[in-house]
Image (cartoon, rainbow, N blue to C red; front, side, top):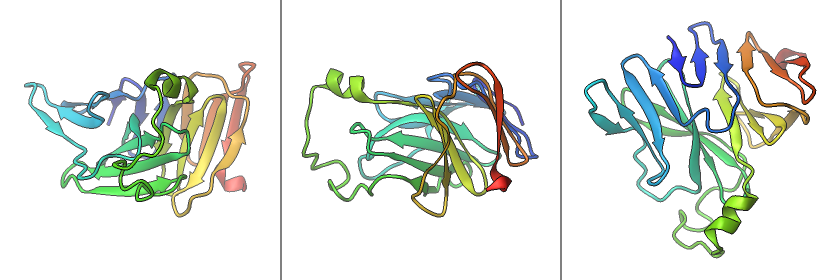
Length: 199
């Protein structure tokens, strides 16, 4: 399986991501293009005949903005960022049944503000956008969610809400993950790697 646009995930679990901001807003897989409609905060799937289907089908308003998507063999993962920069949430959608599941959340659940309907803080949109540090990339393995925000790479166990900092001085660029090892470049362009089995 080849994913173009930003990432590649082979059957062996290898991942390659270009690592640039907005690199995960549109991905191709097989005969489909998956993309985020940033006005509606919906992920769509379009086939070669331009037939479009909503992949995300949320009954309640989302607790943030969909900023990134990632595709595995049979799932589309999407990452939500809260405008108040409180945390991230990662959901998966089964590409056959369209069943939606929470994979990881670092912030509170969205019942605090009744699914976004009772937002207490209203602010100028340009001010909110100025203060958001957007996730540059993310991907999901069997055990972890990995992502980069600003120049920091985080590892988050999918069984909890904890986040661990892998490196605080990371540059933009290609990210590789293979057999539990994450390869990336530091702020000085030097090749670095992180072995998740060494913890």
